[in-house]
Length: 81
Image (cartoon, rainbow, N blue to C red; front, side, top):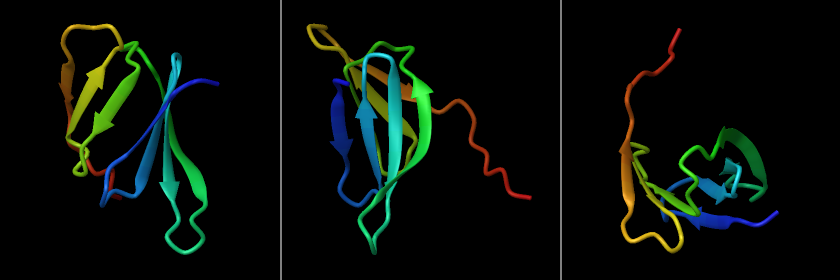
């Protein structure tokens, strides 16, 4: 599987971007073992995606593309019961 690994300092997530899917892993601070948090389809067909520490903005870049795309969250919800 080919892809890009991205990590933001201060964030607890690692993102792995492949041609078909984007994986989000959480890192345990005590054991440093990754656990899969979320997986989504790469509908943007990007080769690199950077999500900020507040998880509000994402910058997507495709190799050999002239510009880049900035995505924002559509809904802000907490799913608290």
